[in-house]
Length: 389
Image (cartoon, rainbow, N blue to C red; front, side, top):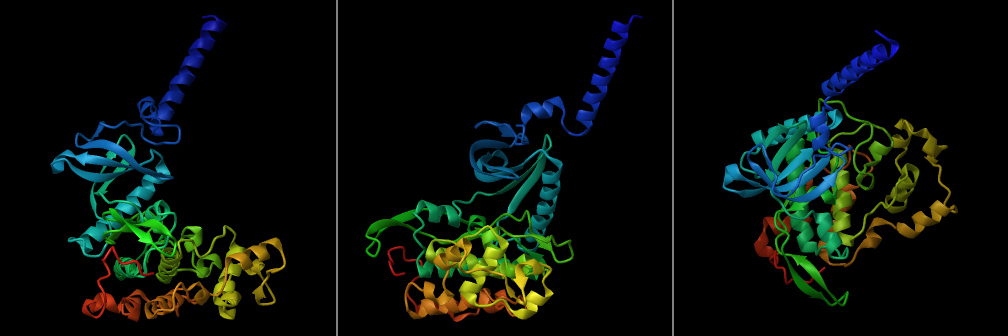
């Protein structure tokens, strides 16, 4: 046999080995044809998955994969949301953890009384973990955005806040921390709205008709006994104990809720930053100095000098923080009693020390929520024609 034939035989042998290795790592030719380079499933409207789920449209996309609206032919063609995880090992493993959380929620709340989204089913489709959920509507962030970031009325915030606190308190009771609470992860069950004239803004605005919400996305939820990642939460909703690497538990969710409720009230985020030290400077501008005990225990001593935040108020960043932040009570839009009650609740949720931060069972008993417990003492909060702020 000549050198040319030997080379061809050797090359063919190597090609065969490479093909076998690619198949064993889950990157078989068939999978590649079904997936994009980034691991998303390639699909079209009308495609049917698992002989059951007919894809109607794409609802959203994230780093984990995509969420699509489907008709479930095993449920008389009812609409459902299907989360299709990327065909990559790290996302498959994360999806398995999310499924274990969702199964726990279903076990503890079989009748959906605690405002958490319900998993209906899950299955594997050519390397993609797929999870089906009840079909919900717009997120509270997307509705805010579609309304030109005009704030929600205080009465609607009250009902939404009560449900959010109830849902997260339910998680905490079951030894879970959500860790990624934000307006994008709170969805309306129905986002139909009425157009209402706002005399203050001199424009029409969208007023949601029904403020019933569901908490979603348990991909980062962590059981008390599990490993706690050092960094959690989307930046704007991240608690000080996380930034200072002091360890975290259920109270970090309470901080996030405080940030979310402020955003509903004002229409913009409380902490508009992407830098840790700047974030801490904003906190001090809004709530006063960080407690010495937290500073002394922090693993992030590089942010401090002689027991104080190492921050130059005369720098460009210093001027930015001054322009963006003021003490919390100065954000009041009205001096009505319910507005002051709301800010009292916010102050308790945005307490620096996790051990002193209000618990959710206590929050649910706060005077701000009194009209929900005794509706006869208050106007009807669901009235979409109410233009009071």
